[in-house]
Length: 82
Image (spheres, one colour):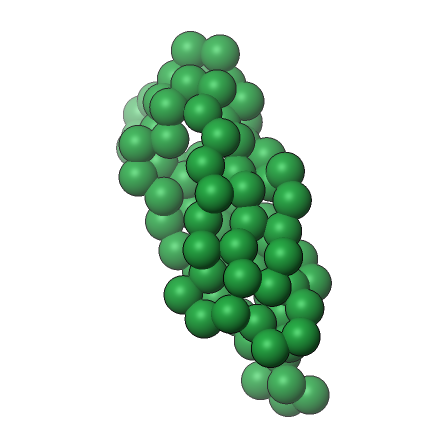
């Protein structure tokens, strides 16, 4: 992208209840990862309240955690860096 920004995204399968997982970026950001955002991926019509959080990120990886107390599910993420 302009000014050297790089977008990366992906899906994490079967993120268990309370599970924390380290995810390697497909491409290491040459300088910095600026932001990583994640969202739970539940098929409809599941209306459960779910929650994931990013616990830290670096230019080569990030850590995601399922903070829900009773649901395991996939999660989707997007990262911006340069």
